[in-house]
Length: 297
Image (cartoon, rainbow, N blue to C red; front, side, top):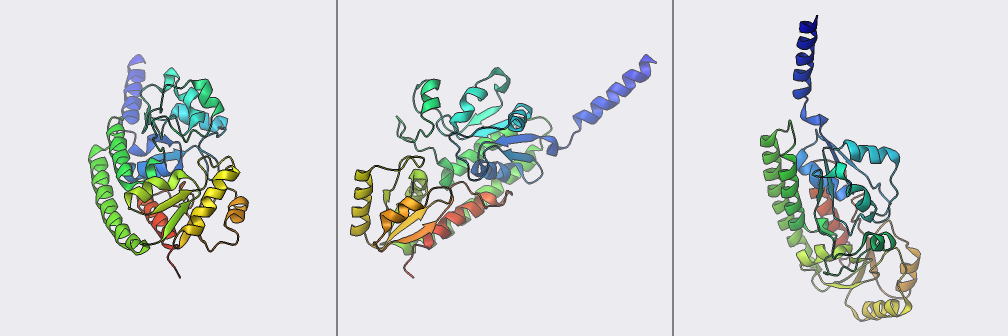
């Protein structure tokens, strides 16, 4: 009797150990990180995101089901302590040790309490902009980090991960060259962004980002800052304002009233991009397309 039980147990153990790769659970904090992970994990691995479209990654309130998903995850990817502040306390727990990959460190030794009060921690002590994912070079670094982490998980086909990383790098390079060529037409156009999320993309592609409307998109800027921005808009050549779908449109309309400003919308949170292995490439192209809307018609 005991022999057959042992045999059964061994048989079950064998079944468990040959579980396919799709049983691996990956949780990411925001959609753009999900896209980078998908590029490496491929379309078969289960990758989910915590912060839904339209919600702020700074002060999101998690559902109990999302907390459970984090507890059951094999790996968790996030930007870092200055971005998804709502995760800081939870992910500091022992049960998450070794599971969490953050792409940035905390900007300084600020206390947890300070983070709790300052949800939108955009002005970092080190001056680091946390919107890494809009820069294709940063995204490639992130993809390499994802590859390194996923390679350590049980039952993972590392040859497949290697091939996915190589394919991603090739596609990204080709897309980057194409975008660089197309954005060359924008010479002489002054870009204004709703908030600092566009800065890394602008720097990477040598765009003229003449001004940022608000450093903290959850607070309306002061009167002096608004006056400064209006003066810059008036003085600039072919000004174009790049807004974001999740933020209040009313007050930037009042800022640009009576001024000849082109308006285009881009989405740093990649809300409408399909979550596939090619999603990040499509996301890069979507930013470029939004910026190209600034060209004089």
